[in-house]
Image (cartoon, rainbow, N blue to C red; front, side, top):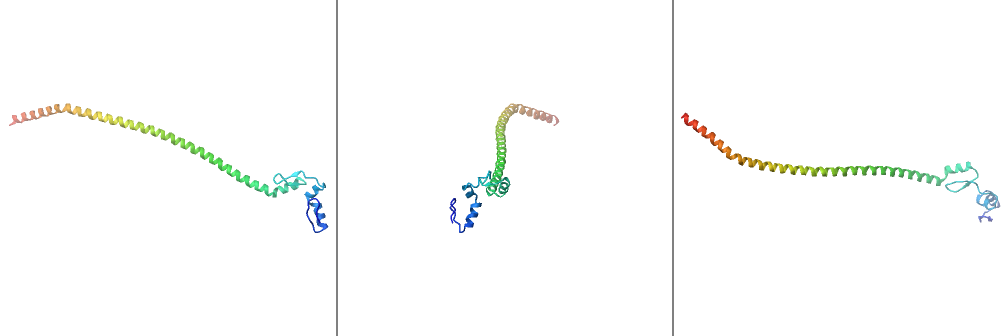
Length: 159
């Protein structure tokens, strides 16, 4: 026996009658039942009342899958947010290090310049010292000669 609305074949009249009285699709096709207003927003199944819908929503696999996906998405968004914070912190640290490098480069340049200035000052002082030594050498020899001469004269008087 075949149902004329859906084409399903049944072995007995009883099975066909039960199908015609209970199958939603066939009842709607026979205009014995209008579509229900309570529709699951996850899987689009329709229900007679809000109670049946609310019970269905608890067990709806599509909703569970969406909830699982939302949980995964929320966790990923939290991770992305943390990575953005870490990225901002890293960029700030990098900027700080770059500023420190620039400061150290300037300080290095300043230190090299000071070292060069000190080297030039030392060279000048060494030249000045050598010049003074050359000027003082004749005076020193003269003074030493005078001291020896006095000592020699004192020794001559004693003898």
